[in-house]
Length: 251
Length: 228
Image (cartoon, chains in turn yellow, brown):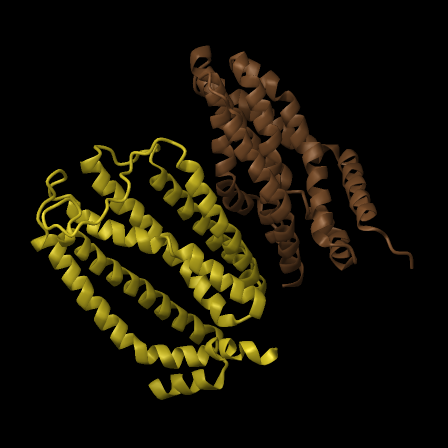
């Protein structure tokens, strides 16, 4: 039975993670830069103005991509938290620790891009009756709660497990909040069905641009998280032999 | 060594916590008075007119309940932590979630129930129409225990912290949002002449979920906070 999870522990070795991501980073960064450039140029120069929204629909290419990515943080932190609680793998906590501020930042970006778009399309920067705005706001607050719990606990092992539990509870809570605020009449348009017809609302010229942007944003998310986790590894493992050798080799 | 049944341990914990609350009346009374004061600030701050108050009455009471329970929960595990009896609860052979559940019930009896009992009076002072009273009291009966049990997780996570007053609220208040929404919607609905039963049923479902899951999470949180 003990051997069954050995692969997880090997995968969870900070040293292995550091070495592997060193090889991945150029590829990830290159792919992200390429897709981001293609998506941005497409959205700004080649996407025809929407028949109703005009040029503001270009904001949606970024907004939808960022919003989608920001929803992945609580599930990510809950999974990392479960790994922390069950197997006590430090790497999972290093990822979770850096995911919380990044998630708060993504939630903020979603709210910001959404209200800029809303100020033109809806005529208002903020609308309480829209369930997605409100639930995103409370996801933002819950992430701030995880960050401040981490900051308040001195012992890093206790903080890791406490934040892991809070992330799991928060992940369930975000879903409940999401559905409870949906009981109000909602202003937010339901997701438009994608269409293969060029020129129709949400036709391929729009959703392909959004899809490219979404992949770029996910790559950005992965890249930021990996870079932050690498810093965390160097800091926490600063007494380990391989980190010393790495530091000496660099100077 | 005689074996104590889980039911006996549950009753002993409940009785002990009730006794302690009676001995330390101030810890129970202060959040309650805070609740009364917060509610009475709204007419002064917003408008003394009945037409305005009627619309916000349910929300004001619900928000004041949330804030007051943040204050009263602060002492939920603190004195037990300081005098070491929390450590004894963790070491006992009884299931911890059951003892936590007993503590939650005791806390609800001394801090939740009084608030619910005076809520019709406050609702009258805020000129809530008579049609809203049953929904208000029922929603508080179903919702306040949910706030207490979910908040109890946050209290347990922060139990070892010296000064944690605000962090508890930062973590626990956003989690209580669904209860606030359904509690006020139930009242608004019955004021509009519709049935509040749907929203009350949702609150009941939350209570069932919280009662079965939250004590387990609180027990885990206590073990984390005390033993890392």
